[in-house]
Length: 323
Image: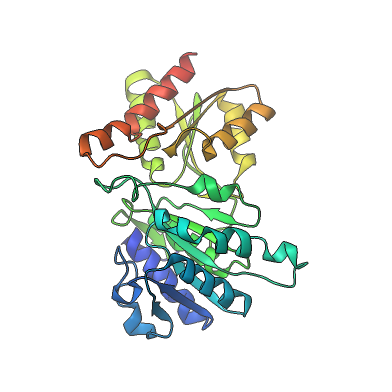
């Protein structure tokens, strides 16, 4: 093991750089990537790889996605930068109707090895058009792989996995995680999709989370232990489609209670899929927390009121255990 401490931003840049050095077919296109990207995740990469592989585009998400899908079908391995998942909605036809279905509709003759990076999540007063987490939309589409890392190590490993995938991958990067630091084993093998990580062991309740909510789930677990003597296990899904049903079912059956914590809108979210699956397979108590179904306000106090935090997760888990 060769561990180095780095931020999520640095882990993402290091991972992409290594893949571009190893495979000349990997290239990046998107708005302002030549200037380092909206969050600095591409800083210096145009100097290293040139404007033919770090390609600035016009402000047209559908054009970016269309070019990327065409490149993938012709043997390239494009990385399409969407700046924010809110903007990627403009490119859903190219992704959902073309990229996702190509391999199935043409009997496996066509493959679309495409990575679509979609920064997401509630920020700091970025309001209704810049604060969404739309992972459940893409989990609903056959043909797409959906990933959502929560740490520098998982960012490093999962980005490699996504670039090497022969199928289109939608990759959610929470905007508040870019500066989070952690140890990364830079010699580790890429992380397999569909494998959850157990971040904390527990015996009374299982909390399932992903992306930025993992930190809130861990903080909630600590509070539950300190204040109530409740032992909470925390699973980080990391991969939303496919997702690790076996790990979630095993944990929920063992603890007897499952809470799914998501930052996105609670109704019709991916948490409902996890909850329904566990309900069908076990008899455990089930709960879920998420944002109310309202547009995200610009006002910071209102934003804080809506956002799901560690206290909300702890309260829901406590109620579940006491039910």
